[in-house]
Image (tube, rainbow over all chains, first blue to last red; front, side, top):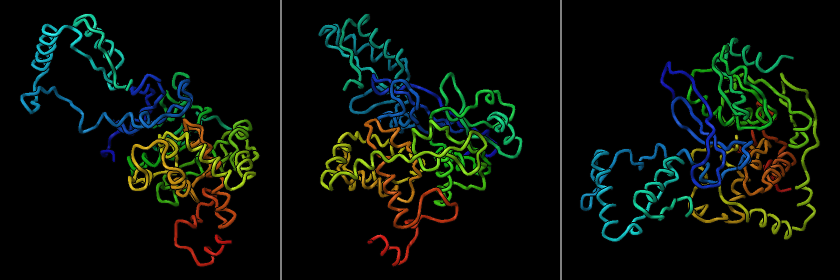
Length: 142
Length: 267
């Protein structure tokens, strides 16, 4: 329920489902200031008003309690919250050590359906141009 | 007859806090909530060709804004949905102003519902259309065994997306039988035949208002609408009830009936 006096708001934001390469048209429902659901875009040229179960649920991960919102670094058996500077330093050290010892193809990069196209582009660029491997994959292919 | 823009403005000036209608957003017509009679969005309102479950959206809006009144654009199917949802205590018609739009002759013929117009028409001309019976006639020409095989083939394509339930303006339960692991085994595609589809068909009995959004949303092209249409025909034939028609009379399946009702079903 909305707070008293808050402005009424319901709108649909057209977007593209991130879960696979098909590119189905989804409408993200916003109620108040909250992402509240997903509808199929009826006249979308790809999906023509239909979605699979992933498309219908595409809004759900945004508020998931299991979503990581802060960087964590593993220390022994446990994950410890840290800042981005320290987290990225740990990643760089780990990747460099693996590449220097076993070669660039000892490293793999796993992109994500929950990132933007541009973020995924940057990840494969890092893999190919910086580390020197074509080991790039994505959860949508599985 | 006035145009949609003037109607939206008039209703917003006349006591409605918001108008749920559709507007053209860069070439795509989508549901939109307009709260201001002077909003630039008024220039973009249109009925459009695509139907969205406005009744379902309203259930949420009425709960989110419990002290507000809404005007809403309704086709015949939207009105039937709201009437039935009101009897099921999901919407309060007292808080709604319905602005009726009649489907065009082309739309009505393509869709084939029994009443392609609302009770009070503000936009468009009322046309009657022949009810869509092709699939029902085809299935009824088959023997029982052939019918079973026919439906088995149709439902073998189900990818269990839950789109039929998700888009349905009449599906509002918080806990859905189709998500109960003891009724529907998780992770199995296609879902068990015929139980999955019988659960849904039974839930639609006396409730389905024949909007056809389920069939439009089905990625597998399963003729769900014909199945639910047949259920409503049986309801009318046996229990003289058709969902969404009367604002007062409740579905015989929503209260405890008499012995006579049960005898009628057995005939």
